[in-house]
Image 1 (cartoon, rainbow, N blue to C red):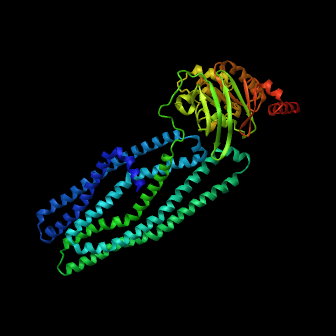
Image 2 (cartoon, rainbow, N blue to C red):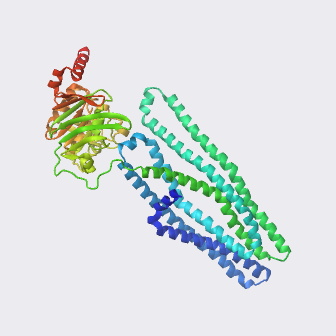
Image 3 (cartoon, rainbow, N blue to C red):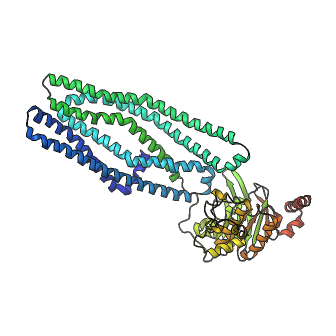
Length: 576
C-alpha cells in the first residue's frame, strides 16, 4: 500500500487530468448501464405492446448513447496518455537528476546495465499503468457496482445467482496475486542481470574478440537468458493454473442467469424485456471477474517496477552539502591534509595522511598499485567522506564547502580516460561548454593534441566512438588533458595522465604545461620518474601510509623506496 501511495504521488500534479479522465470514463460507464434499460423498454413497449411510436426515439437514444460513449472514450484516451507521458517525463527527469547527485559509493556497487533496465523497462511499466491501468481498474470497479445496482433493480433473484460465485473468484484472485507477485519480482531482477551482461559484453567487445572468448561469453549469456526463460515459464505455469479457472467461473454466470431467468419467466415472475435487460448486465458483472487476473497481473508488474525505482529514489546522497556551506572569497589552491584516514567499508585505504600543498606547488604521489594514490586525490573534491582528520582547501574544510564551486576549481585527468560519443571539440569543452574555439585549440596545443586532431577527417568536429573508441590510448589521454586545462582550475590533478604516450610526447606536454601550471596547485600521480622528479614535494605511499616525503634530491639521498624505484627504472632503460 505504501508503494501504491507513492505511485499516486507521481500523478498528483496532474489531478485535474485524472479527474477529467475518470469523469469521462464515468460517462462511458453510465451509457453502458443505461443501454439495457432502453433495450428492456424497446422489447416490452414496442415489440410486445406494439407502441411503434417509441421505436425511433428509443433507437435514437441507443445511437446517441453510442456516440457519447465513443466521444468520451476518444477524449479520455488522449487525456490519460498525455498524463502518463508527462508524469513519466517528470519521473525520468527527476530520477536522472537524482542519479547525478548520488556519490561514488552508489556506482561502486550498482552496475550500469541494471540502472538502464530500471530507467527503461520499469519506467515503461509505470507509464502503462498511468495510461491504461488506472482507467481499467476504475472502469471494472465502478462498472461492476453500477451493473450490480441496476441488475438488482430489475431482478434481485438473478443477481443473487451471480453473487454466489463472487467470493470463489475473489479467493482465487488473491491466491493468484500472491503467487505471481514474487515471480514478477524475480523476473525484473533477472531482466536487470541480463541487461547488465549484455551492456558489459557489448562495451567490452574488443576485449572479447582480442581473447577469442566469443563462445565463453555466448555461454554466459545463454545461462542468464535461460534463467529468465525459466522464470517466465514459471509465471506462465501459474497463469495457466489460475486464469482458466477464473475465466470458467466468469463464463458460468451467463448460463446460470439464463437458466434462472427462464424459470422466472415460466412462473410469471419476469417478462421477456426484463430478461433481455438483465442479460445486458451479465457481461458488465462477469467481465470484471474475468479481467481480475489481468488487472492483478498489471498492478503487480507496476508495483514491482515502482519498488525498484523508489529504491533508487530513496538511496540518499551520502555526500550532502551543509546548510551553511562556505567558499573562499578567492580560490588559490592551498591544500592541507591533516591526519586523514579513509576506508572503503571495512577495508582501510589511507592512514594518518598529513601534508601541505601551497598555491603554485606541484605535489607528486607515487607508490605501488593499490597503495591509495588515486583514492587520495578523489578526496579533494569530496567524492568520498573521510573517517578521521580533515582536508582543507583555502582554509575551509571540504565538508563545509559548497560542492559545485569546489569541484569547478579542480581539473581532473582521470586514470581511466573517458570520452563521450561526441565531437573532439565538445569533449574538450565538456567542463566549460561556453568556451570559444580558439580556447579549445589553445588547450589542445598545450596537451600536444592539436597535431593529431588536425590530421583527422573532421578535425575538431570528428565524432569519437563510445568511450573514445577510434582514438588511441595516448590520443584519449591528450584530449583529457586538454579538457582539464580548458577549465582553468586552481587545482589540477593528473592521475597517470601520460602513461599511454611516448617519452618524447610526454616531455613536450611537460614543457607546454610549465606555463599552465604557474599559480596553480598540481597533483601528479605517475609511475615514471620523469613525470615527478621536478615536483616540489614527492609523497611515497606504502599500504596507505606516507613512507617517504621530500623532493627528488632528498629522496635519492635517503636511499629508500623512491631510490629503489629510480634504480629499477634506470636498469630497465639500460636493458632496453
